[in-house]
Length: 50
Length: 366
Image (cartoon, each protein chain N blue to C red):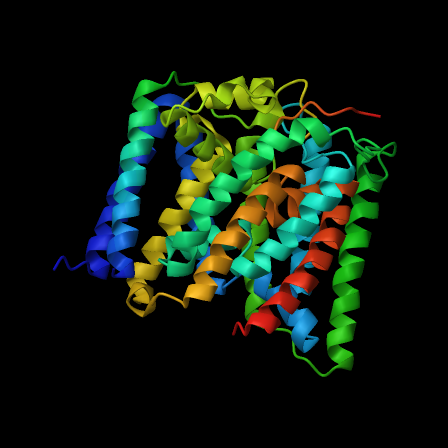
């Protein structure tokens, strides 16, 4: 299949999924998992701090 | 037969940008719009300058050309001048800190290897996917799956051989800390620079402009989001939400019960900084690609290259979670924040890259 068609399908599907997720999830202010208090790694993992 | 031209793709991406920008604005206000615009700018800038990590590192190994890798260190050095004082002075801004442990060593090595198989790192996969690369249409879904697998492993290995977070010159005042970290990063840039001069290799001045542009965008991301730019957590979150949609109880796994990941899993994907920037990057690269007609030249690569892209994506996903990020979140964000894990990440990923390049040579990749 033509790459452009596959790309277009993926973008449309992804857009629909993001909008669906947004409309069905509680919203909050923007943040990263690393910004939580007990996180010591950017992904939010509370690793041991020496 | 359905025909899609560049104008249709351009229109679709503009529509996507407007819709998501509007939704983000309603919830996060102007911050959401700014971060989406910064993501769009990053996507366009990375594509315009072809600001790649995978090819740059490969170029050093294969052709002894340090041009690109030297600019990566210059980029980190430039970011560090603003990152460290901002992190020190503002209670709302955090650095990219992570422990030095076994998972960092193994994860970065796996990431470096996978990066050569897929021919793109975290940011590379994003902007080339955005510009319609057929290889990345395959690599990205596997990257996403791999990063979710990584979240299942990380909690069990995070404390193995861990010496904790180490901040370089951590006990010194902000100015001295900045100076020490800047000197180290700029020193590596100068080392590669003089190496290039000895080999009579001219450094690409265009990439110098690209480096300054990316540095400004990275600083703006830190300022407006409160943490350094990271790419791979967005992939992880997208994967986790998709796994949930297929009935896999991802929320019951340890990683997804840590408060940060738990919060992002429960909330809209547009509430996650990394996701918003990633979406913007895809849109930005796609818009530029459609304007310059890049989509027309994207052909499907060979079967071996597609399988390697899938494997590379999977390995990068696992590696990114085990090593706390990719070239952007771990290497750039880490070193520019003054965290030792960024340096360790670079060394291990470079070793992985060496083996990845050897694999490419063996299977005859161009």
